[in-house]
Amino acid sequence: MNKIITLFFFVMFVIGTDTFLISPLLPTLSDLYHVSTDISGWMVSAYALGYAVFAFIAGPISDNLNRKKVMLYGMIAFTISTFLCGMASSFWMMCAMRLIAGISAAFVTPQVWASIPLLVKPEKIVKSMGIATAGLAISQAFGLPIGSYFASFSWNTPFFVLSGCSFVLILLIAVLMPSIENKQNIQNKQSIVGRYKSLFLNPKASPLFLAYLLFQTGNFASFNFLGTWLSADYNFNVTQIGLAMLILGIGNFCGSFFGSGYVSKIGNASTLFGGLVLMAALYFSLPFYHNIALVEVAFFLMFFIAGILFPLMMSLLQSLSANARGTIAALSNSAMYIGTTLGTCIAGFLYHYFGNFISVTTFTASMFIISILIYKVSGVLNPVKANVAKEQNVVK
Image (cartoon, rainbow, N blue to C red; front, side, top):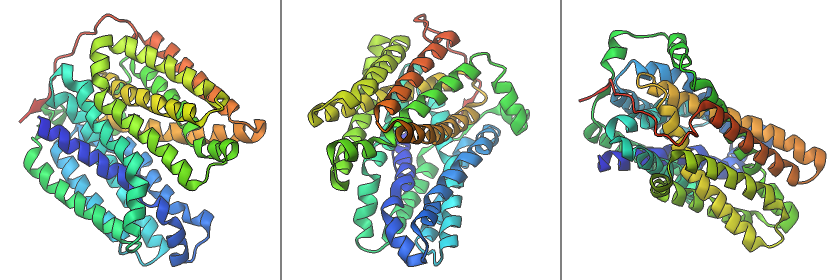
């Protein structure tokens, strides 16, 4: 199964890189399509909008189908739409192709999270999810530099390179990934609404998703304004901010890739509780550091911990139901995008109203503490190991 998990790593890397690919191209594309800077942002928003909206639909649909086929067809659509981005002759064509790329990605990534619990032993689930998460972390760290490098040849080169990589992944998925289907789901297909109703009959579903949403809201509230803070308080230029963000990506990668060892030694409950407490303390104290070296160390530690917690949170969500793994994965992805939107809006207001970053990091720390309380109420912070439900899925 190591080959499959490695394949999932590269799937998440390619999907993640596509998310950040267009950011360094915006000035060039604005001139090319003769649109203003504010309007050009829709080339980024179209992808996020397509992903966020269709994730709600993609998850329940995929639970009724063969996961390999869903991932394969999703990657085919993703590859074609990304290639056509490089051929886009107008602003609206670019937006349309970015929208389709986002929709396609919404069908691909939930299959990664939903398939891992079915393909690996229970004790290796967190580690495997960490490896897949590491692919996303690496894309966050290097997606923008990669896009900038290939854009130095021509604006459409990054799209052609990424679509070529996606085509290779299509072939690997077809050859390496086993057929994964739930016979019970296929025989008793549920509607999209019915799938969500069944999921939330589990009393732990609502608190776990709410805790995850609050975590992501607090996390992205501060994350999206780190550059603004570094510029305002430390007079960092764009290059220096980029290097600082690279530290975040490296920390996140290390936590995602190596964090499973800490989880196995400490336990799920202690890791989740301790990790959230440490992140809350690190974020709250961040604005009080007057040494940039301490700031960089804090950056690494915060995202190292985040890299450990994210796979753990995903595994907890996936444990809610053996018959709705795609729905769970898609809903968690939508929760992340909603948290990003809420966190950015709230942080922007706080930063403007109070005129300092302390208000933002205090909000982030508060979200983490509330998240801990909700996890406590749900019962997952109980150190007693939960019984693992028997899988009803068949892996051919």
